Amino acid sequence: MGRPFVYLVLIAVLGPTLAYANQAALDVAAPFEIKSADPVLSGDIFQKMDVMETLVDADTSGRLRPGLSDRWSVSPDKLIWRFHIRPNTRFHDGTVLTAAAAANALNWSRDKKSILTRAPISTIAAEGNEVVITLTSPFAALPAFLAEYRTGILAPAAYAADGSVKAVIGTGAFKVTKLEPPLTLKAERFDGYWGGAAKLPAVNYTSVTRAETRALMAESGDAELVVNLDPASVTRLQSVNRVTLESVSLPRVMILKLNIGSVFFDSVEERQALSLAIDRAGLAQAILRYRAAASQMFPATMSGWHNPGLKPLAYDVAAAKAAFAAAGWKPGADGILQKDGKRFAVELLTYPDRPELPLTAAVLEQLLRDVGIATTINSTNSSEIPAKHAAGTLEMGLLARNFALVPDPVGTLMQDYAPSGDWGAMGWNNPEFTAAVKKLAAEGGTDAEKSALAATLQAELPVLPIAWYQQSAAIAKTVRGVVIDPYERSFGLKSADFIK
Image (cartoon, rainbow, N blue to C red; front, side):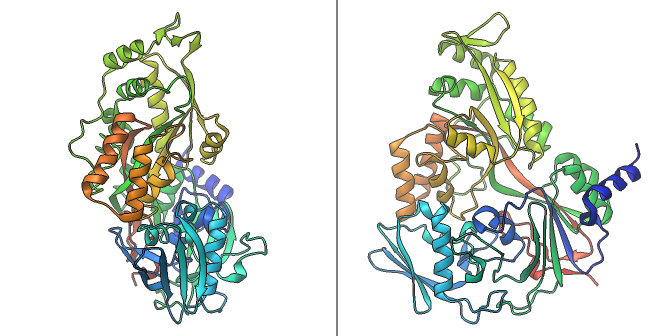
């Protein structure tokens, strides 16, 4: 079956999402589905597409900078923060951005168990042209939390009386003209943008989960920006003259999440044995096609958090078998480990939004079989991981976790490991670690304090780091100004343009 036939099938299935680009709009293709109009659920996409903004922004190095708040301050006792609203800023419906509108959006976000529930906030209110956030205890990380996509600011008209979001009415360089979850977002230039009108007349976003389909869109010119390319697609597109390939290292790690409350992983020795069974270097080279084996949780690019003094996580099948034996696990007649009549058979949950995850799961299945663990792979919706965590039924989950959603990594640590979180530790409780994370969030801290957290994670392995990430993207040579942001906040669309 030739490529032209496959392409015709794709057009029939996806319809207008594969229409040839006419240069009137820049088309973006990525694997992530739009869950709803609510920033708490899909604000990462709205932020990247420059339709929604936050009070605080961050550059491509993770440094905080003014956003919808042009300046902020904190009281001497560190309990009252004031965020001054940028003047002459309008929402896409023409209404003025006020402190009251921003406070309203933040309060709705807080009510929905967003990142703000992790901050010691007493009240969020408007006073004149300032949003005033009162804390119950000092929290130095608050500005970084207000840069996270779930704190995106929408107009009062975007919200129903119960706080549900009816429409995406933001302040960004582009205003939404069409939103059809889970696949499509269309937006046109907002000429009243406070930062100056964008050069592009319009931008479109299409969620395309299959990596090979996204690569085909880049190759054919049906998308000017295609992100999250798998290694096979990168190899294929290297010979395509119409695109430029770019890759950046990310503060993101692939992890194997464990239910530490289960009989399989309730001791450090069992988790260390499991870690020894994983050939990270071979797996990263085979699946990701670059040297990305995670020797610890934080990659070297995360200055201060990476601990160069740690002994790297190793691969040693003999040592893994010996460690399992010492923990009481013995091979049964079929070679699968058993203890107290319990067979070491587990479900590994993952999701295809990131195409490398199911492939990695398949390799892990064989690696774990080599030490006597029977693994059943369930590749499903990513939402099943937090859902099964909440239900207590998750056994293992393979996922990618971004430490830059909040520009300060302490924000992700608070969500995942202080003491637990849907995407991080499950059943792990280390009071000293939790206290150290909360101290960093409240007061800031030294590099030594940050790298000490890496040492604790390495010693106790509440999750198993597998690989560090790079972001690969294909950019049409007809476009300039697109940004591949290591912190994955922006595509740079408000400064991008077609080359005439």
